[in-house]
Image: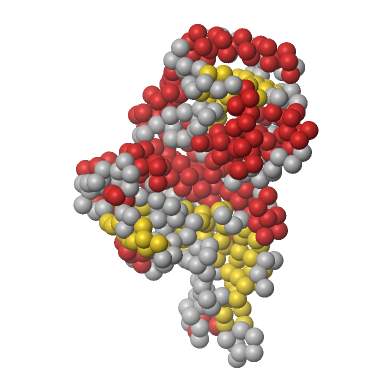
Amino acid sequence: MTDTNSLEHISAEGAVYYLFGATGDLARRKLFPALFSLYKEGKLSEHFAVVGLARRPRTNEQFRSDLYDSINEFCRYKVDDLELWERFSQHFEYMSLDINNVDGFRELNALSTELDKKFDIPGNRLFYLALAPALFGPVSFNLRDGGMLESSGWNRLVIEKPFGYDLPSAQKLNEQLNQVFKEEEIFRIDHYLGKEMVQNIEVIRFANAFFEPLWNNKHIANVQITLSETVGVEERGGYYDKSGALRDMGQNHMLQMLTMIAMEPPSRLHGEDIRDEKVKVLRSLRGYGDSEEVRSHVVRGQYSEGNAGGKQLPGYREEDSVDENSTTETYFAAKVFVDNFRWAGVPFYIRTGKRLPVKTTEVVVEFKGMPNNVLFANRHDLAPNLLVIRVNPMEGIYIKVNAKKPGGDNEVQPVSMEFCQSCMIGINTPEAYERLIHDASRGDSTYFTRWDEVSHAWSFVDRIAKAWKEDSSDLQHYAAGSWGPEAANELLDKEGFHWWPVNGQEEDNVIWITNSRK
């Protein structure tokens, strides 16, 4: 078993990295910059090579020129040391490959042998498939049949979401991969698990003595998880119209953050122990029994035309490659219960959507209020205490408490004490893909999703999707630039709660005590 603590500062082993889809947007925006950052920080040894693979022809010089442009545009480090850049770029090769032709994989195997000798690599192979899920199986079979898995080192397969479209398709995909790779060799990326503040949830919970005793249904009233986007579907209309917010964000990012908040303390900081606890949470999710229960617990919406910042925004059905009669949701909110001893009765409210007013990812833990008609609660409407974890774009934590208003006669006001990580570190925080590529190269699977996590998440989501497919009458429209359908507010109103303001939308009456604000 891998001890995540012992691996934290270990440089990646020498390996050949194969980037399938090397001319695509993910490689340009995320993967190339991540590799350069790792190299610049000494987290990649000199014993590595990267082979870019795609159908279109490219020379090595053209590929390295694309690499240079990618890093200068998207990387948190720029190419300001030409000697370092020259050393780095010499590790990159390009090969045009038809992924359906096994002979091309045999040529790739011959190139790999040359790279092993050139860079003194011990036969380790990391295959990164930035491809459509339908291609994962065929590429895996050709890797095997082309001799790519017969080297003396390890083999690891890194694949992007979505992992299937529903549980049956995910099962079929997993069966294909398991014919070639063992489960411990498969690294399923959910890039939200690579974000600094998502990983910080474990530390906040398990390294602070005053949180863990309160982390249960006796003291927590509800938990709110918000993942909001200001953008529309843009050029992804064709893909998104077949996916929607539930599959695009709910099945992976939202449920993964929920498991991090709700999981029990693992017995050890081992990857498998941590993932075991996350699976227990997913097993404990209360499934919705029928379509009526889905409608009473889940709200779905689709943005119509609206206005944000003085700019007129089109409706979803007017977007490129979207069906003019589409019932695909661009927003959903749900009330979720984790039926175990710790969380019984505590609602988890999750929401995500496009064309919302603010781009943010945030977790709000609302604690139960003080007893009514006792001491200060007898004279004041006391606000509940909050713990807020800001994941993106600003990283940090704040705690909201009640305090005496200066100069007042026992007047009480909310006070927020904030730690702004982004303000201290600036924009140079490591990107999620840096952490995940580094972890995969070291064999640390802690922040990758295991098959049983994926299957339980699909089981939960499929019940919602089934109800929506049967009847689309509950689809509500919201103006682009607004916070979604009114029914999402009513979901909380029923229990006497409300959505708390998120990053950039703070309450005016709160006093901030902070490392970043004046």
